[in-house]
Length: 160
Image (tube, rainbow, N blue to C red):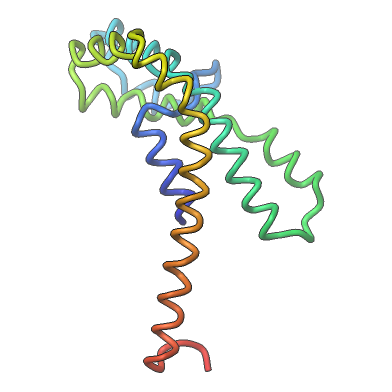
């Protein structure tokens, strides 16, 4: 659940994977042709932030967590599953959300930031930030779950 929340957070922060040729039909139809320049700039923003690499990194870490939790599952299963995942589809689902919540001028200003020295520094640091954030989130979620289960058991709600 926590990993899912982190993936969603990454998508909403512009860390979604880069656009690919395969796009869900609902994402294509959600974008109005009149906004073509704005949509192009949204995709440029996602590309500029290195979102494709980060999306793949999040996906790989998520699968790594599943692998660790399920050691009996053969490696081939995980390899096959990873090859079926097209993170680019998620990006196309995010583009209309950016379109709804940010004006074209906003998008242009964010692009300008990411083209600045500070923006480029953030982009360069982002893979490590995401990796460390995922680890911190997993640790936090695990500790919270342990506290919840302990309290439930203490109050007679947990398994006997």
